[in-house]
Amino acid sequence: MRFKKTAKNTSEKAEKPSKPTKKSSGKAAAGMAAKSVIGLEIGPASIRMVQIAGKGSGRVQLEKYAVEPLPQNVVSSSEIVNFDTLVSHLQQCYDKLKTNCKSTNVGLPVSMVTIEDNLLYSETGAEMSLQEFVEAEVVRVGALDEMNYDWHTFSANSKEQNVLMVATKTDNVNQFTDLLDEVGLNASNVDVDLFAMFNAFAYMDMMQGGELANERIALFDIGDVSLKALIVESGKILYRHEAAFGLDQMIHLIQRNYQVTESEALEMISGRRQRPADYKTEVSDYFNMQIAQEVQRALQFFMTTRSDDSAVQQIFLSGSACVPDSGLAEVVRISTNTTTQHIAPITLAENKVKGGGDLARDADSLTTAFGLALRGLY
Image 1 (cartoon, rainbow, N blue to C red):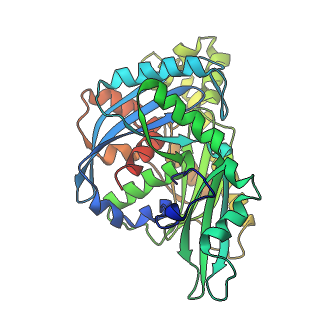
Image 2: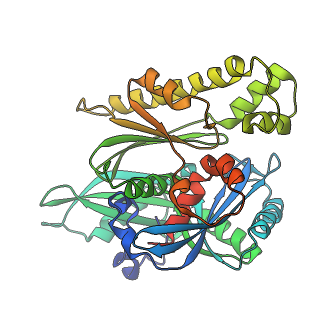
């Protein structure tokens, strides 16, 4: 979504609503311009930047990426606690890119955003325009002149449109755009991290031939501190879920078992530090089972919201807590009895980054930043 300013809000924006959920078809990708854009994810533990360029015919080139760890209590959940310190670390992350690109897409945490889907609007006999209909929903969240919002429509049937609306306080948007201004970057789009995750997996599907377009699939991004899930079918988000579970649980597990520092725990996870003999059973297998339980729980929650009994056909896993070669996908497959793949969508882009070993280690953690960058190429 591209959050727009509200002035009464805008005859002008109504003409070009954004289309966040159309990406699964892959058709828009064919019109990518040959330009460069940065996707920026700001989380409680790290800042991640991914710079990509459109190559035409749906192709994307990974130009550069950078990861900058954050001290504690700079970002807490969805709240920026220490703005000045965050600016300093954002500058350091951008300096690591060594780029002249300024165009940046940043994602708001989903907890900052109100999302309303399955709103039905009918033009036949309607007393208000589509924009007025959306604004009537926005005012349920806050005063219209204090909100930024956007929407997308689907055809529910010949007479009705299904409307997806997102809204957030203008102060939330301004906080992130001000942050970029401090570093000399331009906020091309302010999106939602959940939709960025969708963008990344939609790109994956496009690159693999679009075979998943009509399947009911579950997407899981297990990040530093939270797990985000989407159930998607035919380009539409059917269900979304977020849980407080992520890489930090694995770090704490290692620290409890082996009395090591956080940085030493991270080195064990990445394989840069020798792992104890019982690491697989005490850490890796145990943590994979925890992920499988969280995945199973999200799928069960989804099924309670549905009147049909159609199950999810495939599961895709990514995120910083998904450790390569740990057997995670197989554990989830057995637990859910559903075909499961562990995939980092960024690895499907043409890679111009030097140091392939680093990308192999970091790829899973870059899914949201990659999805945000993709937003700027459509």
